Image (cartoon, rainbow, N blue to C red):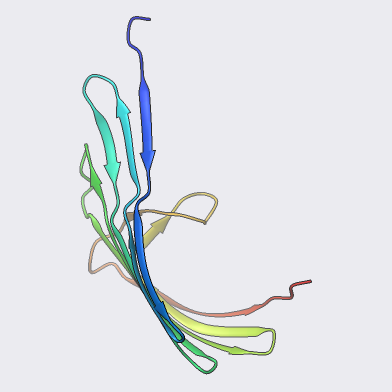
Length: 125
């Protein structure tokens, strides 16, 4: 074993929730103990406010890495209205997603925002 590698993954979080409001922060930390140490820490602040069928969501990510990206701050805001099985809304942000589309992995420039309207339908059984 010329260069052993050890990894540590932590995800501490804190969340406060009442009936129509949630505020939380999680801080995923990935460390790879090699020479030199490689790490990625991403504090994520999120909030959701729900009023009847209307929901307002906000997310803020800050990417702390061994090799710093051009922009470390990603933000998103969503306004969502739900009626029966339909969900419609507006999304605004500068985030970049992974290939699977399930995790924010980086940020575009602070002024490089995108926005779109969406319509979704879902059924659970």
